[in-house]
Amino acid sequence: MKILFVCLGNICRSPTAEGVMRHAIEAAGLANRVELDSAGTGAWHVGEPPDPRSRRAAKKRGYDLESLRARQFGLQDFAEFDLVVAMDRQNLAAIERLAAACSGPVPEIRLMRSFDPTAPANAEVPDPYSGGATGFEEVLDICERACAGLVDHVRASLKS
Image (cartoon, rainbow, N blue to C red):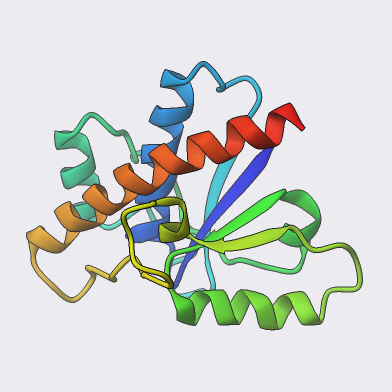
């Protein structure tokens, strides 16, 4: 199974989600059956590592984001991934617009927090970019909860 996490610039939320999910998948013994990646709907940060604040916050919790580099989401991702996970409704809408232009099959597309049973319907992962360090900690908290549910979703998908 191949999962792609998507936010706006691919330097804060989506690489954090990828790092948290990588750890969760390894802990669940599924690392050999699941591939992960992240991308941004915008191209501003292509080739850059995650935001230093994201890397610092993640490192404090044992997640390694150092090897990740930003890339832009594109039509080819629909053919490559089984699940595309958007961090917020704005990016979900951008992905769905691209999906409408896709001539081939489209993978499942969901909001990240839809995997967190404690989150309200249509809840988003807030963008911490313009705020302080607490926003990056909040993103980690949200990703940890959502990734726990996403691991359950992966297990169910791999069984069917």
